Length: 506
Image (cartoon, rainbow, N blue to C red; front, side, top):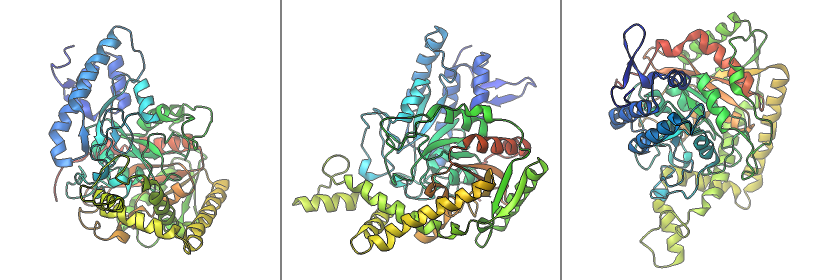
């Protein structure tokens, strides 16, 4: 087959099928059956980047041309029997706070605008071992601080379902690129919901693994005790496949857990009979959009029909999770971002007459408003006289949050909540109101505080056709249970068959 001959293949019915609408496991099947070549797949995605990027603005550093060249090399090696990894030649997008050797890693900040990483993150090494192809580095909120991808130094990413709305954040570029079929799947990072919330806004699947399951080596740190890399995919099966690749103990990451590797695709069973699901009432109270609540209630009824046991429960400490999260996250951010001082690497001001000027002006000019706001908050709560009142207290409440979840998981296998209290909001409506923006994370932050896994799957659309996400939360290292529960629901509702982005403006 000539890889450049045509990018649309014919299905059995004689209708043209867009390669880029296929899931990764479907692409794998077509590669195995020799119905497609690696080059043909990669070229299709590179063409979609050219077609949609001007509207969506998901990429900071697109690598379409380089990816096609790489695809041709891998195709040749596969044909010669030199490569036989099952995912060889599948393209992927990578959030721009994950280090990629020889490629810019900017964290969407002026501070790192021209920084080229000298090494690969562990997850990138694992992708390269499987011969995946990097289609580019994806936009995000600066240093992963935000819930809308409006705080990027480079551009505001737009939601392909409605180009006037945000894609969520901070992994908004990753979610928008997957939803608009510019990449088949992507890596994001999740500190307080930054994989799950944009997945919800963009009508796709986002999985935040248990803290320590995936190495953070090479992830530019925002809040070290909360950050976690995870998959953003078109469906649950792809999330399980990507999770298989990126998990595993890493000696270079002291928080990496040394546990036996699991094949998460074995959890893809369409059966939830006997599954015990808890519905924490605190997540369904004041502040949740009525249409979001309605779709979640429909999902709950669907689980009952499928044989799961569903009960309302209480997580009393949930009311304190958001405040606890922002104290801990800002404190750790102020510490982690101390390295960006205009001396060692990154942006350095040209306006200085002494060392103090270099520090002050480099940081003032190099960081955006949201990053500076969080550094100031974090420095304040760690300062003498306030440490005990704020940071120490937040760590004590964190322990209570963990205990509250432990009690819940003594009784339930998973907890079901909204991923976000609302659908995607319009660009510009919250970016000037930090408190309102922080509330976008209210359903997701407690998962990071407790180090738990969580997955967001689409459960319908609102009256304007905007996607709504359902969040399933599991106990530590219970990804198999989460994947099983999410997969069973997905197979029943078939969201992708009914709905797709239209790239329209309302």
